[in-house]
Picture 1 (tube, rainbow, N blue to C red):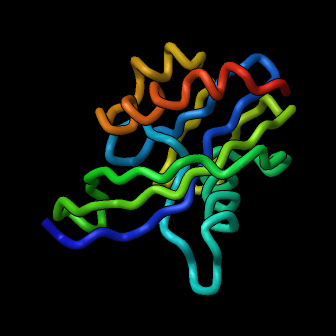
Picture 2 (cartoon, one colour):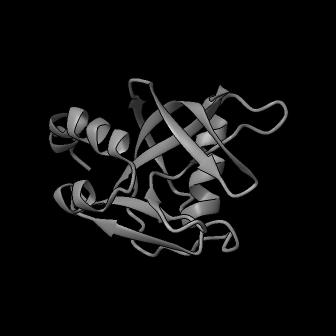
Length: 141
């Protein structure tokens, strides 16, 4: 397995307590996230990736969430590799999702936390969401 790379990503809660998941071009649902561009810190990466994958710009940062590591693939990097996920919790009043980067992320959808637990494609993402579920349920938007 290749050595890991790092990503910045977000868990975004709307006013209904739903979270957004992105449909990736290779057919899986996941959290909006991606690799940093030159000069970006992880929070800047998370904000940019959330915008590219969902169209959401009006984000209120609540807190940095715990990091986690999972395996992954990417259509331009077909060998399995480890990804260190730097995650941030945001809230938004915006309901409309309009992915910007439709080649890599053709769709984004709001899900209840329980629906997201059933929809996330990667087992480690589901375990991570389960581990922060009580925190998410306690956030007031």
